[in-house]
Image (cartoon, rainbow, N blue to C red):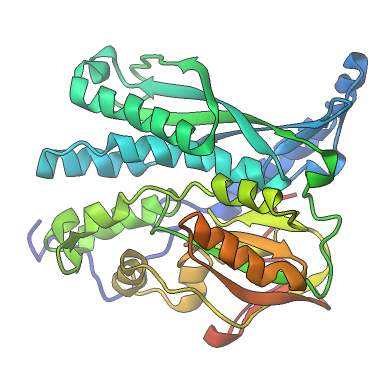
Length: 375
């Protein structure tokens, strides 16, 4: 792309300009959740019941008697497009990492309710049968999927591999995963009923952009003279940095349980960025006094998209991929347990009585109770 054709890089590039407008998407989510809630009574015919508090949370929970079952379905989004572009530029396959990203999108949501992941199912919808003819790419996807399952201790139960010409673009693939887990004993359930003023907020580090915000990241390439090969740090290209796989956090939550720690609440920090800390409907104030280091690729995106901190932290994970709300006396132990699993963590803040708002003191950021409407 010539300089004359390159879009103006002096103005802010927002997530909405990249084609994602949550003001349009979220009302459908809310409407769907309300319609879905009306079907809960159907479980009674089977002798089961839903956990109503799981409505609007990251995973749905059903009481089946001696334990709870939790389930979730999630898609990867557009990160595979970056892998395809980088394959064309470098000749390398990135689909092992893409497989981990897809599974992480489901498992990192499932564990927020205290579930142990048990089974993952795959949905790989290609734009045509020829997608599967690239043996290197296909094998990388399979091997990466299995490795992520092994890391999380789950069985890969099966899946679906449709060829959807006319629905999925030719040469592309839409990846998704569903996951079922068990909450056993029932005391592990974490839907926020124990969340209270005085709790500590522990943030687990991200590995980069994870799999949210890729529409913005891809749009930003139009502003970069070297495109995906632009360096974000010495020896690290923008494309390689974007393709760092999402952290799988279930080894941490399982280790916490073995240590006798049951979080009062959890949040997977994905779409909506740090606003996800406001996910629970309780009227509480979340005060952050320490922020994690921001990965170079996220600093790069913020700088080149000309975003202020309010926009960046309200869209991207900015170094925090998962939040644990725990008793203040358990916070430092959580940091140590996460570190033993290879995940950096910090005691970032505390929960206080007061209006529903998020205050990030080091950055002078604040969001009110209207910043996240998902119920």
